[in-house]
Length: 332
Image (cartoon, rainbow, N blue to C red):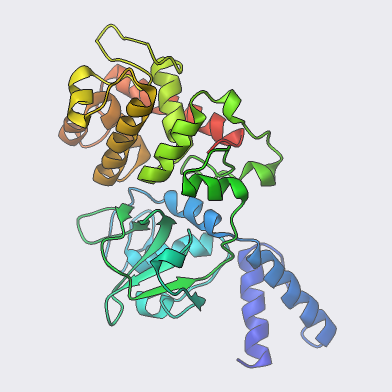
C-alpha cells in the first residue's frame, strides 16, 4: 500500500467512525497522529461489540447478493454490514473476507466476533458467538439466525480485539458472577463502558442458574432472568390459574416433554433455556422466540408472527423491557 492509499484508507475509516477529516497529508507528524488516532479508535471495538451488533439483524430475510437490511442480506452482506456498523471496512464477498485480519488456529481458539468461513473455495461465512454457536444468513428462504457450528470451518479469521472483560469470560465458561454485555438485540453498551451500576447475583435471584444455562445453550442470561421475572416474579413455587408451575412457569405437559421438574429451579431454568434456544433457532428472532414460549410455536407458525392474543401481545414487550433493565444494570 502506498502512502497515498494509506491516507485515503485513514480518511475512509475516520469518516465511518465519526472522527472527522484527518490532518493535512503534507505533514508527516500529522499523518502519524491521524493514523494512531484512527487505529486506537478501531481497536476499541471488541468481539463482544461485533456479537451485539450482529444480533440486531436476527430475523432479517436472506437475499442472495443482499447488502441492505431493509431488503435482505446474504452471508457476506451480513458480515460486511455488522463490521461497517462498528467502523470496520471489509470486502464484499466471503472468499475475500476470509483473508482479512489474522488467522485463528482452530475452533477451540476462536473467540466471539471471529469470522468462520466454510467451503473450499470459501462460499459461506458467519460470525462466531462462542460455545459452538454462530450468527449467519444461511440460504434462500431462511433468515439471519443463530446456528450451531455444523462443520469444521475452512478458515477462522480475527478482525478486531477479542479481549473479553472478566464477566463475559465467566459467562462463556459457565462460572458465576454478573456479566457486563447487553442482553438485547439493541446493542446496549456494557455497563463497564456506560458507568451503569453492575447488578450482582444477590440482586438477581437465581443469577448463577441463568448464567450457567445461558452459557450452555448460547443465550443471554438476562433473557432467562427476564422471563423468570415476568413469569413468576422469581418465585419457584408459583402456580398460575392455568396450571403453569415454578420459576419459569412451565405447563406440566411441557415440563414432562423437557424431562424436568418445573418446581425445581435448576431443572426449570435448564428446560426453559432449551426451549427458548430451540424457539430462537426455529423462528430467528427474540420476539418470536418469546411469543412461542408464551403461546406455543404452533401459534407463531399459524399466524406468521406474534399471535393476536392479548396476553402474548403484552408479554413480549414486557419481557424485553425487563431484559433491557437487567442489561442496563450490567447483568447479562
